[in-house]
Structure formats: structure tokens, C-alpha cells
Image 1 (spheres, rainbow, N blue to C red):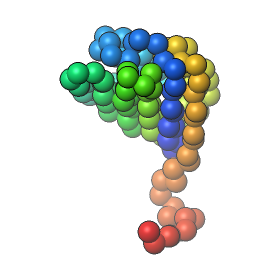
Image 2: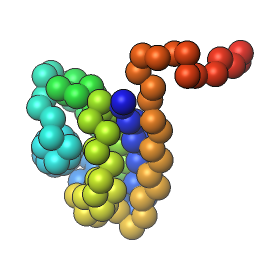
Image 3: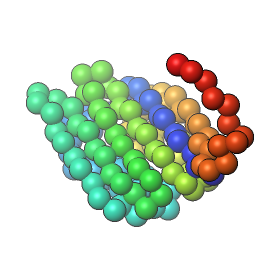
Length: 120
């Protein structure tokens, strides 16, 4: 019913501390998954690093960057379960990443009778 994608991008290019470039990457990725931006928030940290977050028409999208490590973390949560198709290669290209680790988790919406409860 919904999918959450968590992407870790390593060996990224110098765009990681460029507010306009990160915003552009986010907009391209959001467009790619077929969503529209409802609201967005972008924060540039001092001395370096950026967090981008947007509420999108299918749920949410975020980017967190650590330029000093050449690392970016991207999260996509969407009720469109085809969102994972091709997004890995697209993100790797947009960030110029040497390596990407992509994890996908299916989120069960409604029908809690099919889930198992586990105490933490």
C-alpha cells in the first residue's frame, strides 16, 4: 500500500553544501516519483550541511547532507508503490555518488490484522 525508501549515498560531489543544487535534486526526484510539492522547508547549517524536507502529494521526501563526509541521506515515503523503480540510479547520477545503498520497506496501511505486534 505504501513504500518507504531509505538511500545512503557515498562519495558524492561537491553539491552537498549547495542549497540551490540540493533543491534542484529534490525537485527532480519528486517529479520522477510522480508527486507534487505541497510544502517544503530547507535549512543550511553552519558551517556546512543542508537539510531539505518536503511534504509531497504522496507523503514526504527528505535529504540530509554531510559534505565533510561526501555523504547524503535521502528518505522517500510514498503511497505510490512504484516509486522505487529507477530511483536508485537517478539519485546516484544527481548526486554524482560513487556508491548508493538503497533499502526499501513496505508499509502496511489499514488492515492491522495482518501485522504482528512486537514489544520493544
